[in-house]
Length: 143
Image (cartoon, rainbow, N blue to C red):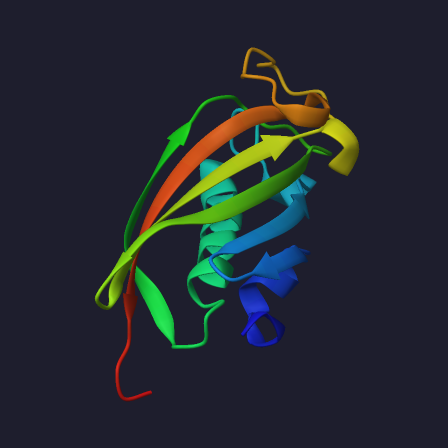
């Protein structure tokens, strides 16, 4: 599925790992991803989280799509930041599922750019949480 994902490829999103119900994806924030305030556009942060979510919910085989999602932006991101999205399955019921994705910047996985807001929670390896995403999935039948 990831090999055919032209949107993710066009943004340089890298698949770091995938396992049943889990996935990790990474992306560097480029100049074209900045909004009118000079900070990373939230749509790109959402897209990275959505990519990790898609990889995790499709990791077991059946074609699965998003039924809905929401995101909380916790800190601004800057050009040059390396963002890592870690998706984990919380529950699967029937054809539906719920997945949480934490998006971080910096740490061992990549450098920290010059973003204005550095007050986000710090997690392992010095990474800072910049967004939390919750996705709701649905298995598509007949495909």
